[in-house]
Image (tube, rainbow, N blue to C red; front, side):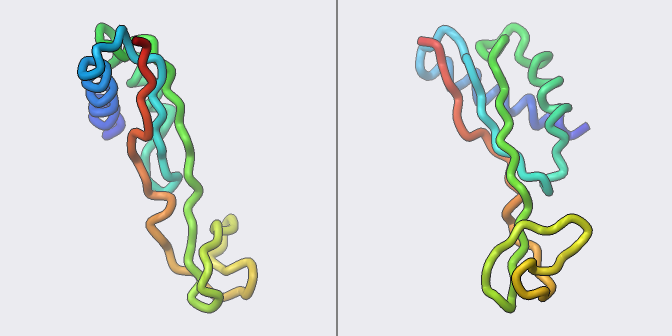
Length: 114
């Protein structure tokens, strides 16, 4: 349910960007969502279409760039994408530590029609 308030913020950012640039409307919004962020992108898409009604973002495409979570291997010193059902480094078998990669959530860009 927190996706509703997050999506309101996305529409506000897109609409404010359009107004500041004297654009006709927003044609596309690109957001980045980490797979460990806890955000359900299908809900964001559904709310975006509803919340954007009557704003410069109405009818805009919402593109979601998904980021896979990465782990850090203290043995190898490298990051790796966590294998399914495992925390082991695929190179050496050591247990990896979680990183911040995969927890992202932000608006990457707003495309406008001038």
